[in-house]
Image (cartoon, rainbow, N blue to C red):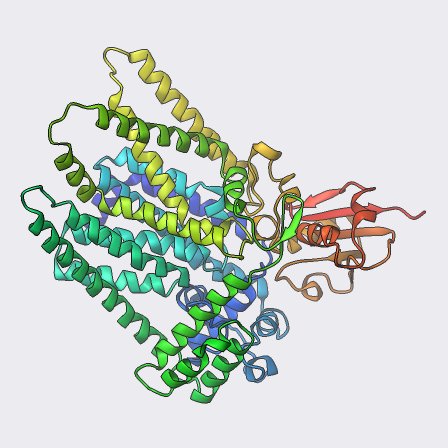
Length: 598
């Protein structure tokens, strides 16, 4: 008890911030309908626990989906195991997810709410470990609190930290894994090495793109060993590098043993024939079919010790194929699959301006520090440099990991939202906090007291602005856009899909209809909610190919942009959007129009 009392007393402000952010997250999500990706994720996670069968949603690792499904294990939930979507065809995840939530008498809203609570917990835990990580690096708690505040009140992190998807999984578990490795380097015991391996394995079970931790860990080990280099003792540095690389290999071996063990548990009751079918069906239509991967995976499936890794590699290959194939989306008036600057603009438009100002200032402080070091008259600069990279190896490695993530996202054809670069943000926040601390150390309070407090005042104003950016968009965090292009009300004009519109506002549309006493509406909805479940006998499905009509219309922002700008399709929404303004924007994602009779 004394330990916990001291912890709460010592870190009370951090816990207060975490509690406040958690309250905002829970308070904002209870009224969100199912987003597009939640349907397959929640049913998949539930099936892994209850059926030990991995036929549903193999293209994502199991951990995040399973955590979301834990509350459902204590609820009266019916799983449609005799439905054709579970039996045949294999991996009919979208139909099964829809039926699981909406067609068999389950309380979909209750299931979604409680399924999102573990996601919020992961988000908050990611913030806590970022706080501890920053505190250990700087030995200054106030610096760690800045990083924590930037993490917890980021509208983008909070938006995706509340939904049953893997995006917050990779973001938080990357922080966990890097912190565990840093903790091991500080305290190199076998116990800490094993824990670093376990956390590395859990990260691999969160999202397949966490494989980028492999080159990251190897890079950290290399520069950590290189930090022992001295001109007269190069051999010592080589031995240290090889030793650190060997330790990292041990960490990764422990991690992948955990991956195999985990997968084995949750394919325990999956028939081998079903796994073969899943492999053949999943690969035959992809660009991997001609490379013989299905043959190799089928062979591994028949070897008991390799069978779980066959399932793991199948998912990895599926998501790799998906990123090269991509999805059609909308970006600044264009329809396509890839733009090299997509995520640059996503950051520019969706990161709060206050955070950007702080980050740009931090970059200036960093480069000024480099310039000052180069111009210094220190005699043994190489010794100082190598000591610095050893002391900051994990932070430098975090930068490399963030660079890997950003480069991978910018070069593939899966550009559906800022969520694909979420793992970059924790590094930006640590970097910003550390550089602000470095700058504060250069200020002389005694000689330039006014200048010192002016800078502190500017910082406090920016942090209040940052918090205001979060509160101003509550509870609709997903479509947050900053002031540069007009805020969340104008954001859909530049980017859609999970930047704005993932189907989260169907319940709010129903509430709007109730308030306005609208009994019938024409709707073109993009998302995971079920129209018959939420609007029984009150809607008419509409589409861009329908002729102009009158009455009430509810059109998802994504549907407007995709269909209005796609020249290959017949019909569009110009007849609506060019002549009528929206009566209302439901959660900034569904545009409601009223067209009077002529």
